[in-house]
Length: 264
Image (cartoon, rainbow, N blue to C red; front, top):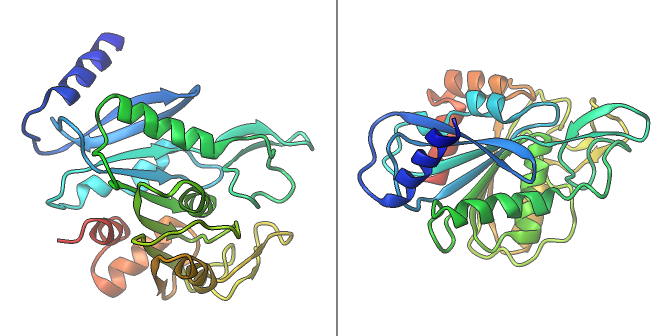
């Protein structure tokens, strides 16, 4: 396995044409595993999408639920599918969640440095020559992962050109200048965990969410462009968003996200 991974990395940085299909490479940074998906045979630096799973989920399930590379875009890009931190909460519960600023109630440990982790993932892939230079990074997140995506662009968004928030919104209040950032919010009209009108979450009534539009207004005030798309009849889960988008627009969730990130 180690020899095969080394050979794959050598091939990645050597240069050459991309082939059809998708390959998924297991990787690890800071002791946390993730998966890197890329066009089969892709080499050299490409735009990078960070895809952040929801609380309680993991990188593999995020990759299966949002297969961005299977959407037929002409633009070649890589996707790093990332799972949240795992830790023991003060009350003894085992928690998997991003430290997005509010999740999950009183369970998150403030010393969990997920911003640092995401920066280390980017630096690691940069070091392998896999990320196109300049503003060539996008971030997509679902639920708690969406809130972490907002936190990332607000704190360290200089290289991020696009943000997609799925069933989640802004958890922090201090956003740096975001001129040039394109942002899209997708949420179901029947979502009770992140209500489209804002308010307490059914997951934890102690958490009060802004509405998706209010989150977008905060980004716009920092210089970003933002569009919110309410998905009629959809709930909180990505699968629900996918089903309703497919039924109402003819385009599923992954294709909708990929089209926004890489319009053609």
